[in-house]
Figure (cartoon, rainbow, N blue to C red):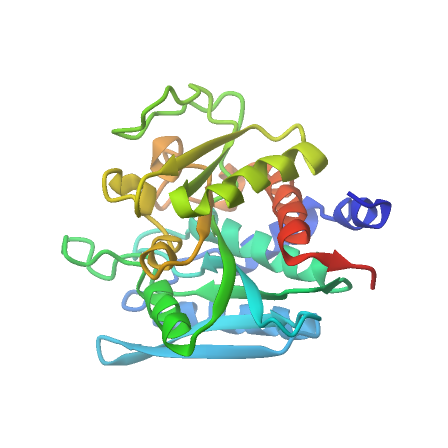
Length: 305
């Protein structure tokens, strides 16, 4: 990695990530707290706008109501039209303030947008905050969530978007050397017993993105433990591998990876009222942010400003 990029990424600190989580923390649910969900959307739009990005809403209907995925665009220099998406969901279930799930992912998304703004890229880079990832009716097994990203991925396919890949940030701040890690059912290897790593989930079509994340860790954040999982097909044999906004992109034939602290497989506060800022490891979130930034610099092909 170039010296300029090293200096830029060293500017990623926990302060702004903490401030974003604090601003977003609280129930953000379309039925239990619709005003808070819209306030979160407004905060994200305002933050993107303050950084100088063009901001647009991707509007979609769900249950007779209109919702918005929020997109900030860093235009690429190439005329190829290829783009790279960075995605995090800003909604919660009805009973949690959602600091880890998923204010942490949105906070890292916003920090990436801030730190990468001065650079030029060959490929278009889009920062996307999606909504309705969580289930509106948690007692309805037919409601699989990810409705915002499903609408976005379907829109992308209809419009012929050439997506280089999507990087999904799904709960990225609960970790530590004293955290007990459990193994999801069906995983074909032994997962470390200590929850101090970031999981990187891809399907076979996205294997190169998983590998490149590992290279990014090696080049920029070698102290970050990470565990890769590449699933066959679109993850149907391992349902836990599909539990976020990457899955709709797989289903529409796009490459995508999910970065995750594995949520309920280590975090006792998952979907609980206790999922608060005070439980999080912000130094870990910074490490994830730096490694992700290094990945984006690689795939989007940064050039000197």
